[in-house]
Image (cartoon, rainbow, N blue to C red):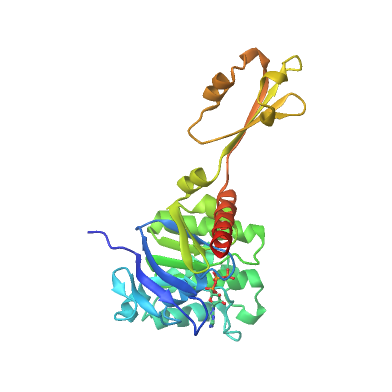
Length: 310
Ligand SMILES: Nc1ncnc2c1ncn2[C@@H]1O[C@H](COP(=O)(O)OP(=O)(O)OP(=O)(O)O)[C@@H](O)[C@H]1O
């Protein structure tokens, strides 16, 4: 039987009299997946991660990590998860190497040299390993946070906006490393990010939180196909009589632009519009993105809220 890396059952969090930061959430990660948790500022992403890692207590519900209940078997749960928090590290007066040795000791790993070296090399920190943390740039501190989260080889990795404020090169490096971990070690990953294009490239499944509620949960591609449309642009020869087309499809310069569902092929469209092949100069197809789907979802929520209030 495979162990579920992460499962929450009606997990919620409320602060005082404010609306819940997280409404009861049921979520189950599949072994070996890279799951993206998206949501606007204040949606509840960090609240969820903070509960899973024992930083804050849930108001209700339960959660398990690799089958271990986060409240009743908290030590075992923590041994199985690595977490990269949003904020940067302190430990200013220690070297990178020492921080990783201390952190290994925290998990009872007294001889973790080989794995620490592996992480230092993979994250481009090896040549800097004797530098004090306070001498590091923001980007290097981010790398150190990731190395710290992985000293104990956790099967589940939680990344809370690991690339916030990080330059493009480091962002690419970090995602490349996450892909490798996932592929080579089978590490299951849950990440939050505001870089939606990166989530589209990296994640096989997406959950969207909005005002503490999970408003979408689907395979990345299904979400895009459900919430966006393809735009097909057809450039026709100058002698084509454009008056026979629906005027809403006609753009200037003998161009047609058609918004279609994903099931409709370009061939079928050309047939339906009865366009002779000889009249076609060029065709381009623009697929929807996860960002388009995300914007559509949030707009849908605002519309529903306005309807409710009206
Ligand atoms: N200690 C706290 N006391 C009261 N409210 C809090 C506290 N921490 C978070 N909140 C509230 O909980 C809600 C969810 O916040 P959270 O930090 O989880 O959002 P987020 O999705 O991680 O946002 P961001 O993308 O900005 O990091 C927000 O309304 C926030 O103001």
